[in-house]
Length: 278
Image 1 (tube, rainbow, N blue to C red):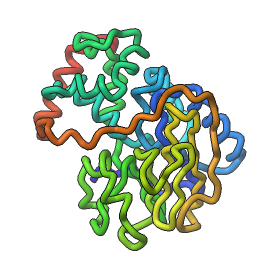
Image 2: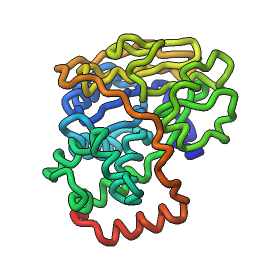
Image 3: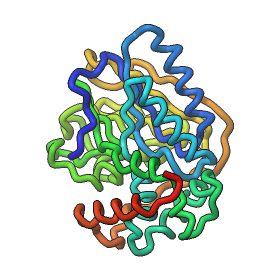
Image 4: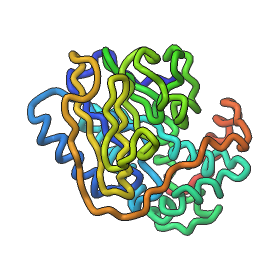
């Protein structure tokens, strides 16, 4: 399992829920973190799903790339980053249509492009390189940060990429003791155990920070102390204007062809050679 951990993470970690193109909320979150941290050493872990559905995916990516140059920042990969990469780089059968149907059209429009196959070639290659480099997990002494979740009763090093990006039911129904640490995740703003999409889910064994920001206008930022086990010591609520009806991701596209890593790298290299916009 890809690991984005740092050797000695700062004591305080800010975990940020799914952004989905809401640049306005991301900017407010950055300001809130800076004000809250003051002179304290900290890092920020973004839990994935930076693109799709909201209006400003391109500028969200650019802000995150810039933020990594001035702060200690880990940006994890989400399933929407995978949907975008499968459509743009791998060109798997049906991948473009699946991406467009799940918010990709809004991402293309944020680049000033029409939602059609030819537009994918005009996304800047530096953005594709960045998206392709995102890790699946990071950790502190008591917690594991991941986009969707983990398979219960499975060691961290045995977790599969698609589990980290897509899992729902089996993870959400897991119990205390099923995981190697407290799990901090996003991906699921609404389910039977979380009836209010605008509120985080704070449990003994996991923290769900996806508050459906693209629709509800609420972005949640958990504050975690590396010396204290369990959930956040505080949750910063970043509130803005609601914009859309809440849409839940489909299950993992099992019908899509499985792309072996070697083939994936080959297609990525071909993309970069032919991409416009550098």
